[in-house]
Length: 237
Image 1: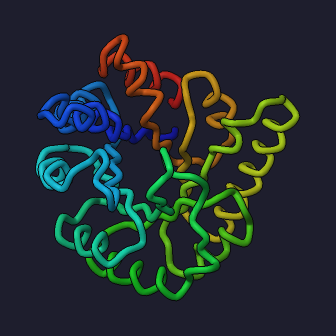
Image 2: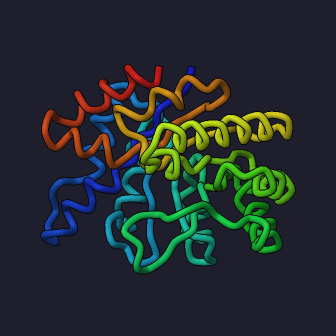
């Protein structure tokens, strides 16, 4: 049975829009846990557009499940992870002008840097995941640099405009799962998944955890965080 990690970044987005104290992503994370979430995911961006350093520190001390910290491949972020010790770190590509993470990490291009930083994090007892496209060569490279998990970027599947394109993207995801399992990599998935399109991905065996944020926060704005998380859990599990 797959797990659900709830990303509370966009609770912080609402807060930062007014530069005030509310809504607090820490409070949202607590409600998500009480609703049954298996973990909390946050992305501390270099530009601090939503999650702030204080959020990372307080969440580390507060949540009772698991904290997954998404971050760019930089010395600053690795230092923060080594200080706060999240349960897991997910390296993601990051661009200053993007609205949200666009595409997967190019592991083949950054093997030397990744190998070094993954080693530091794993020595501190932190599980390391790489956010990548469902591409066989990227999966092989992820295994080669020492990652524990890969997180499949499901964006292209979610953005597909035709049934044929959706089926093709599902086939790529299925092949990626198979390749990762043969190499002994753990498998997570996320990006763009919502209450309608997740069903076909959940049906693919092998994904251990889904990291979902925007669609849950969007529904929470209408029905509340607890109900939004419970509704997603019903689909994931």
